Length: 546
Image 1: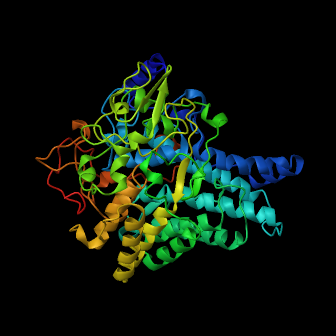
Image 2 (image 1 turned 90 degrees about the horizontal axis):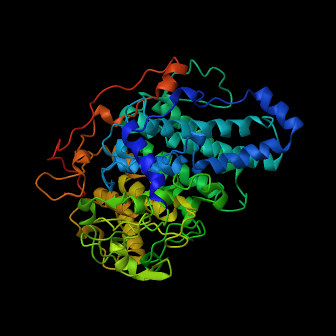
Image 3 (image 1 turned 30 degrees about the vertical axis):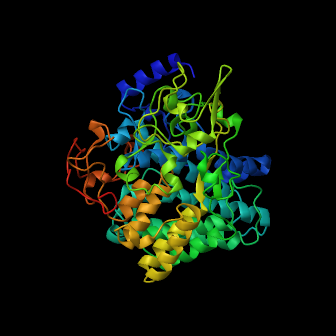
């Protein structure tokens, strides 16, 4: 990495506070007319295959919304996951001019004119538009198996997109299912300028219809690789939907089907940085980042932001490391392999002993990596910096690492939560203990932590899925407060990000972008709440980090 490249970018991040050219983007969810799509497909048969493949490529493509503007905060669904985690309690970034995600840290991301919330709104709706194009490319009564499989995958992608929208524009299904959520756009939508918000219940009805169709039509389908959706991925997505809806046993049952044939990563496998290769056996679905795609703009990638071991990144070169909140870190048992996913307050982690950073003819290794400084390439780690997410090559500059979209461990934790809340606490405890004792901490006892079973499952989700995009959504669906700090206790959260939020605060709800409200006149925006101020609500507790 060359720091001079970052200087101008950092200045833009600091002065624009994440603004972008909103008036140059088309209304979200719009697509070609059905007649246009079918006419094009007749004249160019390969078009539908290009649209289908592009639907998958766009999931994690750099500059997926703003194109040639070279924004390092524009990288599709993984960027949405990162933003949602930074908005929650457990992923901490430095408060500096190099932090393009400061809007999330300070929760100014409710500003309708900022680029961060715009990307997070545009990415799912652009993907919905791409899915709708695939769906409408074929006759409704087609019997072609290949066409049916493409339609099924497109409908699953559409459901996945709505699952990345619905939890953030309204409160949970259990408390607000009759409240307005987001507009529904399908292959049959024609009026994009007068499309009001559907209720939460209506959005989830579409999600379930799409995923049930996908599950039925993908029976017996063998995907070419794990970047594509098969029946088990569709089951996993429906398990997430049922979890959000409070359909506990249905969530557990679908999660069991999604997990069939997959095994969690072992303690040995997790004793070195990982989570970078779609071939990892515990991944059910992932984004397969190719070198060609990464080169579009390598700073707009997960490798640049959440991976602390990249040789050409914001995280390492600008010391904007993704760190764990020390409140959560201190609750992890010393015998749990996952505690090594982060360096401690003294910058030590056993995972560093397994890797080497070669640079300019010298192999740096072990604990010296934490304090290693290479001009324009790497700064010393901050306390609690993550080394969970590895690289194809430590110190590599390609930034073509893959991204996990669904892991078997998530499905196991959904089973535990589903059975716990569905009335079978004994089965839930057995599932949880078996997973953690076998694959994470041999000394683990589920009821030995002082937490309730439900809070223990949430704790395990917070640790296991850290940095993968679940923290904000979990906090919301569980009706928990945002607790980033405890009054009177040491905190590694920067002052401007150090605040807590009650579960019912209207500031939780995302606002619709100015472009959407200007082009879709039926939108009535979210209101309520005010931007948090530092040190507010210092006495709030969440049941996990208490």
